[in-house]
Image 1: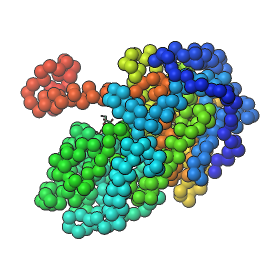
Image 2: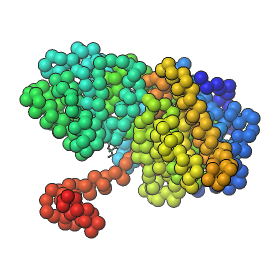
Image 3: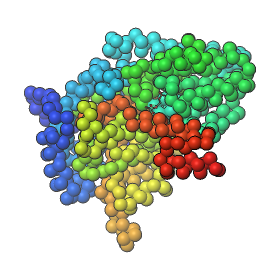
Image 4: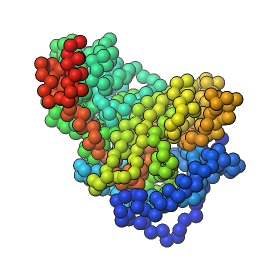
Length: 547
Ligand code: F6P
């Protein structure tokens, strides 16, 4: 277990703090922004490792908080942060009205103003009495229904058309209707051994569906179609192919309703597909796709870890919600994580951020956070539509440690680009390979240390410049509860950055254009025309047709 002897430092706070409502849509007009610009110019004059020379650096710059009987440590001691910088960042958060916006989020205010929607994913994991009344019963009834359904499948009470128990679950969805469920199932599956096997299908590539369905027995396969819109191209085409696969082998149209379930806000489309009313589970427009694993979108998770496991996941997320809502900004983990990001991206010029989970179970976390962070905060206009004039979310990428050390870490240590990284570490493993675990932890700590201090080599080829800021997050264990804590923390981090940048974190208009442009190209790849295309695209269409 990583030994931590610090408690959350309490900062002196003004007795009569008044929340400041931003008067300008632009964060760069705020006093704190100007102060931070000056602090950044000073900060870069010294090396990051100089900060860590202070003997109490770790105690002063790491934060721990308790959730149930679990603890999470947020270590910012390898960040280029000191007290004046932190104070200015906190001031920025206050000037941007973060406290009020946080309250609005939980109360169901219109957070997504381009689509006039609230973003009430927190209601999905709140205890019954603490949910906003407008969604209270809806959430409860749906939760009861889908976890009940999951338990029936798990126990074998609900079976396929020929009376055999289900053995294989095929989850079809993409983006938010895929990444979260897959991440959680793959992270926790081994803790809940059972007979069901899980298969995830997202890509429209025919190779993907072949690999997914080959060898499966339709009599014992349950297909979950997850699409909030029920119009997403990939899910529609994969769903139709899965239906044909099923009908060709069973020749039993009636059986379809027993083998296909849907999670969607478009109930009529799911019914038209052939899914029975009792196995269509709703999601709602106030749950964004990338925030939806807590809803019926997580049916696959409930199938993998059972009703009580799923409820523990929700409880963990709710514990983080409570922390986020009630903890002063200066000790608030998602707020601090967000502020460290803003500092790096807006004041120190960092333009990419790596997610480095040192735990094989979390190997999908970079993909999941890529969507959460880049689809939410990859925006260039403020909520009122005016251009931002500053940078917002940089590229998020990453991969599991220690594999990455033998691949892309070379560039991190000796390349010319700046970056920041989050190291994710689970202190206590679930396996009995103590040597592996100790090496895994040592590798994570050794990498962040190398990134911070670097080394003067015998020749320039061997120089490792260091001076790269990283954050280390430590969970004591990986359980449904702690995974809920972790994922909700990142959701709130994203929200905080969206508030500071004054952008809409809950829409994703940018993804639409590519979808529209693919439509005529699809037709033209099948006929003789390439009318209306630019010459480069026309050339590729014709080349592909000639192959
Ligand atoms: O195209 C982007 C997107 O809309 C994501 O925001 C969403 O998570 C994904 O597609 C899937 O959407 P749906 O659940 O409607 O199929």
